[in-house]
Image 1 (cartoon, rainbow, N blue to C red):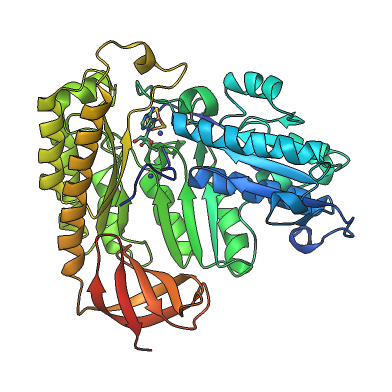
Image 2 (cartoon, rainbow, N blue to C red; image 1 turned 60 degrees about the vertical axis):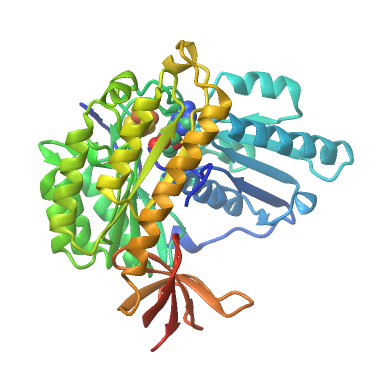
Length: 455
Ligand code: 5AD
Ligand code: SF4
């Protein structure tokens, strides 16, 4: 699954092939905008890159409908909360926002509230709809219904449901598959996003060609288990190879250890324009827990994949997701996770405390781990990850890197960029998003590298 805004950062197989997108009539359709109607909308996105991407599509719908986008609830006629359901605290956060929006509606400041995304697709959304003043609830498969809600006459008249991130922007997400065919014990994704559907290769490549023509230089291939993508005998590695022939810079997330092929790892090492960062969620280092979680692999298989990655992509970075405190996790299981962390030397990780989710197998499991034990294990995993990441980052000091600028400089003159190895870098530069600068790394923390612009 794509990784969500996490508890801490220091990020889903036989398939039905259906097109996820229809081609817009002409590239003109991307830029023409209707008259501004004076109406305003605010979109808030919670969770993973898939949600960021869905929000991009909804943004195009509201702009097509003549709304202008605003950043605060107080200024908005329509507020869209595009939500994440992966952990309980995500729902609690949304309830806070819905409470605040209810108040603004009563004061007449906000007129309509839409709840979209994974909470929208869940059973719980019906309760929220009753409890709060929500005007529209959409799941993840029917976001296109927003078009009608905002007054676009018919679906035929909007190209929106299939659209990628904004054309002309320096970077864009491209969904290559949706859903997930795994059934991990703890995970709501299969119930809210459905089974895996892979988008046809040609359709993906056409979209990327259009994006690149429109000025996009960085493509991120998205899916819950991107490496499970397949079509007519073609597998993810074939797709990645094709995409790397078209896009100037490519990354992909999220991968599943059971699907990750050695030849994909080799390709990452061979192709200069594939970002050398692999996000490969392991979840636990204990074979017993991996079985309880239905992950479909043992820890040694994971270790072997990492070995291949380190050999084929020596300058690459590796990140993972780890869940601590899943029901039935013993101290010995936890020790196995700590051992795996030491063996793999992750460059970063998203560490999550187990969160019981309605509709999942784990919610009914006996053997809940007490909160204080979860907290202690959480801190131990975090420290171990950070120690490893810090040591690895320190080794980058002194190296000269080509840095892709992702976010422009802030008030302190610091822009945020990314090296080809996938490290985040804070760099002093006036360069704009999408530009490359060369800089020497002069210090490093556990999460970021720091550089002075030497261009
Ligand atoms: N509790 C805790 N973490 C979870 N994740 C998914 N479901 C849960 C849950 N119920 C984590 C996994 C996944 C990441 C996106 O979120 O680690 O890889
Ligand atoms: Fe990832 Fe498992 Fe959830 Fe699928 S079911 S999205 S593989 S965690």
